[in-house]
Length: 109
Length: 277
Image (cartoon, rainbow over all chains, first blue to last red):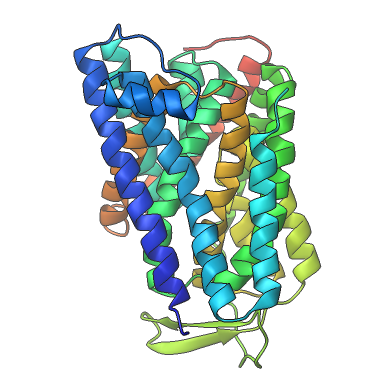
């Protein structure tokens, strides 16, 4: 199967940034209306629940999370395109980048 | 609190605008702006700056990738080095006392000022040769020249090493690191400037994300600093890209170099706990 690597990657990046910007603006509006709202829960499920309950900090964190995983989604999009092109070397290289990203998540002091 | 939030958006707007105007990311202006003007904790400032770096580079990448200036395979290869560097840099940033970050940032600002002065007299495109069919070689259509430009990538090990260093600096200081990667790819690896810019920008998003994830895991992401800066930088960069070329002049560039140099001095002094202005 022939995939357009450039278009796949550009779409992944563009939609991620647009979505996160919308959520960030929504969270900011919520904050400006209720500046003394409680802080955001730390977990992903807590952030999602907080967003549903219009918690400004949780909503902003959701937007930041979407922004953070946008480049990760882009690596996965490229990985998929390489796999469909049977380019084994670049599938491995993409997996190595994903491995470093996974490692970053567990790096706590 | 509301006023601070709105002023942060304004600062980020200016940072994004100036960054786009001079071809630098917003981070080099944002981190000094946050720490010197808003007394933001330097690690919170670096983390927020990394977030805005992800936003601007990802937005810009859609343009470069669609125009096919980006060498995606080369970008992916270099990312194994830049993300590893970012992991080290973020780990370092989380552990060292904040004042060392001020010293390091002052050093990068001096480097930025010097390279801006030099680039004003430097020649633009290197000569290119026809590329044989190799996986890392690339080609793109240059609308300015009206032809296809092909190139061969050379000195990959040196490029990987430099990219590792750029990754460390990126996560340590909250900047994209294009100021290191573009000259590296252009002068050392033999990649034409447009492809170097497109490919460097491509690697920046995932590199900044690696650093930002470490800062997040260590509690340095403040939503009320990161949100206004990300929104402001994105909008500022969009406006800056529109006016680039029309507004850029010799006098303006020189004024910016002076601003960067003054900021370098202030960041250096802040490392010693001295505040001016």
